[in-house]
Length: 122
Image (tube, rainbow, N blue to C red; front, top):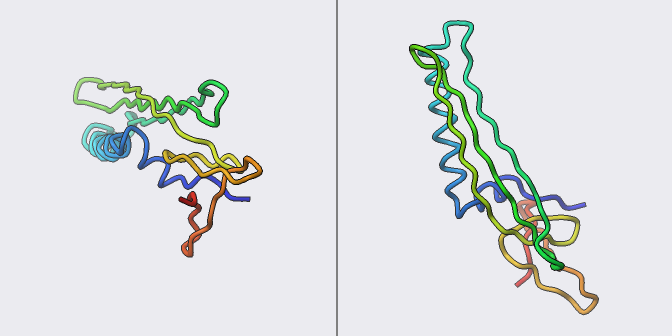
């Protein structure tokens, strides 16, 4: 059964901005842990996804929260950032930013690429 392509999913959140924020925070957390961790202090990075239906169609609203706590010289700094991205849900629950085409049986059409990724037929 086809599944959501995680790398593509993350890259589509908030137009690619979520992926950039995550990369930046992961690097900042690693540096903070090395510089100020001293064995007891650890950096934390959390991603939380909340998925809610949008009306009666085949769309969901993905609320994506990125939170972190990074050690500093005298304690820690913490941030939280929440944004939302609407996505379509295709056959098998595959989430994508692009609307899948619907065939005569009202089923979403998906095709498997040579590299194993699943995409919609246009």
